[in-house]
Amino acid sequence: MRIFRDNGVRVARKPVARNRMLLLCFAVFMALSSIADSGEPFTLSRLIELAEKNSPFLESGELEIKAAGWEMQQALLWPNPSFAAEFGSKSQGAGRGLSYSLSLSQPLIFPGKRELKSSLLSFNRDLANLTLEEKKKLVKFNVLQYAYQYKTIQDLLEHFQGRLDHFRLLQAAISNRPLVSPETVAQKIIIENTLKESLREYNGLKAHLFVIWHNLNVFLRQPDRITIDAAYFVDGKPIDREGLWADAVTNNILVRKLSIQSEQMKASMELLRREAYPDIAVSGYYGYDASPLQEKRFGLGISTPLPLFNRNQHSAEGASEYRKALEKEKEHAM
Image (cartoon, rainbow, N blue to C red; front, side, top):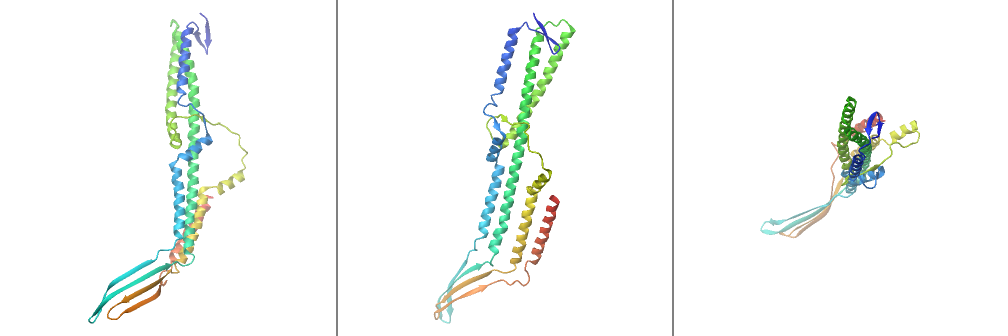
């Protein structure tokens, strides 16, 4: 029997056949455990592409943009005309006859109001675009975060699998030795305890990997587990602090939203001021009475409200104050 030391532990090489059988079992176990993760590795760009494609969260943002576009087109339409008809009989003395009247009215919007309303709604579409951009960044951040957690745990599991294989071999080797000395008994206990602790950590990592995979798969919607091809460290370009600050301000979604809302409030102020100028309605009518003599009536008319008491002056001032508040909030955000 040939004896050698492995990390201070005396190992016997006598039961060669049993050790080879253990190695074969471990190889089969590792092969089976890797089946679930088999297939071509997913790159980070592919993960992000899948997440953006399969996310209802992003689809809702695209639908909001379309809805804002339809609202803009709706604001440009003219109001519908109104039609009225009256039928009856008319009596005068002993005579009685048919009487009816027809009228048609068309509201005419004050020039520029429709375009201004559509322009005002275009800011909603711009805000929806920014919201979608923000959602995409959030999805990308979560996918990258979970992807690296997933890959890190996978690599740790491979490391722990190697440790388990090593300690199982030591356990199998020392189990074949007669426990005749306290040193051998102590070695056996140490190996068994280390193996149990490694198994506990290994199973904890597997449970954590299960949770991380399901968090990641909320975005990917894949039927089976995958492998991820991602580098831990990539050399980047040097940081330009002044340029970084300028980019952070320019591309900051909150600042951009506040800028759009400020411009939207400015357009709202202009619309509120124009609302003081009333819209008019042009109407035409025709009437006919058959008793006792035939009588026909027709003509044109114009109706308009008079801006004597309400010219939206307070609403315009309120919008002006809201705009100032948005500018202050934007100044704080920058």
